[in-house]
Length: 93
Image 1: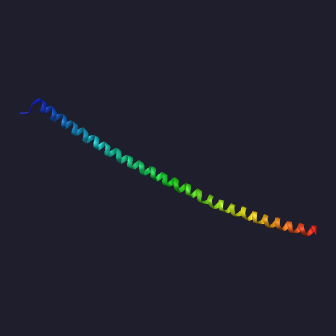
Image 2 (image 1 turned 90 degrees about the horizontal axis):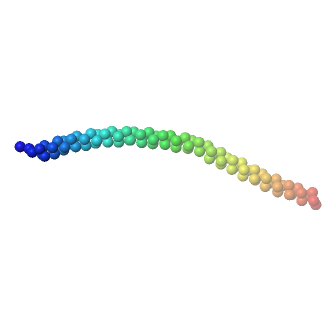
Image 3 (image 1 turned 180 degrees about the horizontal axis):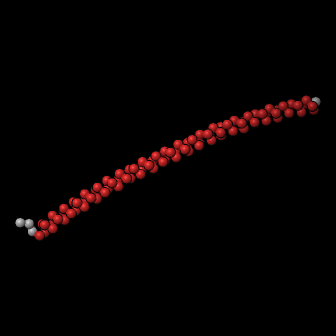
């Protein structure tokens, strides 16, 4: 026959086992929700990355275009300065 102490120990063990099973199940549900949330955050970050890339690419192209215009203007200025110096030398002689 079981003593009172053994019965109480068995009851406590059964209750703790049930409690741990319930807690384990809840942890699985929480981790599943966390996984879904992380997938949504990852998708949002991917979308943000695509948007910033689509905005940055034309700006880089525009920057290259403006640099080309600036260099072209500098080249034209160089030729006009050289031409005006030659004209000035002709007039001075």
